[in-house]
Image (cartoon, rainbow, N blue to C red; front, side):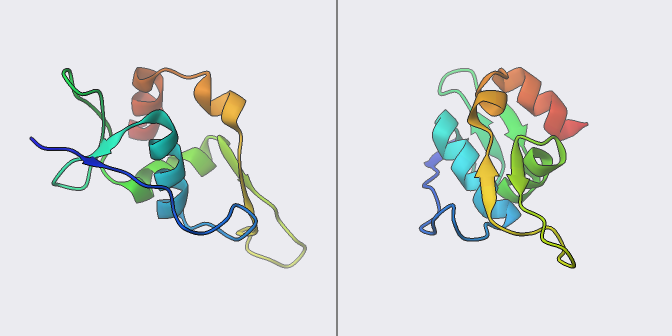
Length: 102
């Protein structure tokens, strides 16, 4: 299985990021790769499936508060996105895979 490198989105963090773009940022930071079926994989020799897609990874990051979106009164809470790097990077690949799968 050939894995493809994941590049971060071209937009800045000061703009709203979609769940997929949040997943791109997190995956790029960890050096994870994209499998041909669209799943996010960790490792080069011993491959570990982290998430079924970048969108699922981004949604899990928001759900587990590895990222936050500023909520303005009367909005849907999808304001500018901030990554909580310390919270996210403190977790192992296996911890993240388990949290995404839960």
